[in-house]
Image (cartoon, rainbow, N blue to C red; front, side, top):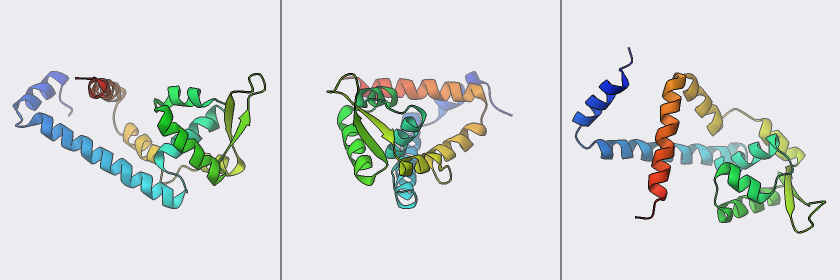
Length: 157
């Protein structure tokens, strides 16, 4: 039977080195994401971040790099490298905007669409399974915690 949030906090506060234990779980997650991303690169030909861009382009074709950056929360310099690699691999194509010739837009190629459809062995498949194992309230709390951690880590001390 799940513990009430107050009980969880009370038990957590009694743990020695709670922050260090939590950080270890974060490092475990980062490592697992990296391992799965490398496995995806071998199996699908794209890393986790590259697939994230492919999935976005599959849902919203003809978006600009700034749209992608804003939607995914990626720094523009990181995104530039990802877009260049995907373009070299032939999974996305660049086209000049019809209205503003200074602006470029990206869309999937046939190869990119094939990768977009793949589900097996992806980070998102693992995330989908994990989300299916917990209730909505747990997901909401986890999202809030991740947002708070991101905010704290982004602060200039």
